[in-house]
Structure formats: C-alpha cells, structure tokens
Length: 194
Image 1: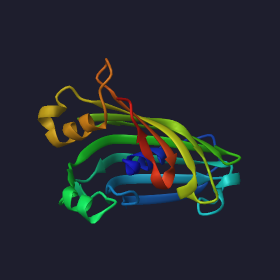
Image 2: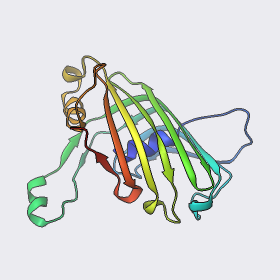
Image 3: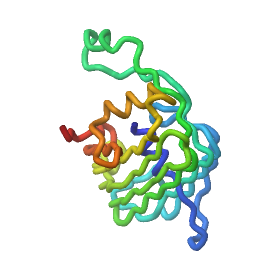
C-alpha cells in the first residue's frame, strides 16, 4: 500500500511554476508494488536526497496511463513460525489506475500530500495527509488518509482486488473504504477503525 501512497504523491503538473528537476520513469518498484506507465516527476526547491526536516519546495507527479502490475507480496513476519504461516504470500492482481496525479508541498520540513487515481475500470483512490519530515525519510512522521472507491462490479471483475480492499476495513455508506495510516514512513501502520 505504501507504493500506492508514493505513486499518488508523485502525480501532478502545473503550468505557472518554474521548471524543476524533471524525472521520467516507465517503471517504479520503490515500495513493493511494480508501477508501470508514463511516470513524470517534478521536484522543485529542494534536494529529495538531502535533509528534508528543513526543506521547502514541492514534488509533483503524473502517471498516465498508470498500472500496478500483478505480483506476489510476501509479508515480513517477526518470527520464522509466523513467516511459515504467511506461506507464499498474497497475490496482488494487475490494477489499471488510469491517470494518477498528486502533489507534495513542503514548507519548513512540513509537507501536505494530495493525490488522486481515477479512470481505471475497477477502482478510484484518493490520498490526503501530512508529513513532518525528519533528517531521514524513514523517520518522517506521517498522518495519511486513503479512500478506496471500488466499482460496483469489482467483486466479479476482480475478486482478488475486491478481497484485498475488504480486508482494509469496512465500507462507509457510499461504499468507499477509508484507511488512515500513521507513524514513521519506515513503519507506517493503518489505524484501526473497527
């Protein structure tokens, strides 16, 4: 899920701001899920590899079309016994996200993130939240909210994806599944709503 967060964070274009460092990717495997598409990232005002706790600037991302390729995720478990229970992992199906756009605006080391994945046949995702950057990215404290809006026929068109979304938490009255995640980015954890 963290890869979805950073894929969405990297989305967005703006015509009125000065050009920044442009990065173009056709594949990104940075957070456990392989994301493919026409991925354009623009970094303005700071070095993302530097000390982010005092940074000011922005990161914008657009991925269109954007697809999460099917893969198997093997969760890391705290013990060998628990790892044996995890077995061969969780099969994550291919997900067409359509266009993904997002921005991360940072002022004095405090960031606001917004992202939106729409246009895919089965799923819409909205991301919002804040990040208090530490000198290292993994130690930066995040408070993020993801809202998954599955298509009404997702259970029949992609049963695996539908099951994964149902595991995330209960749907609200509109059928959307909100997920809050908090903690350091290196150990981001969902906040239970049950």
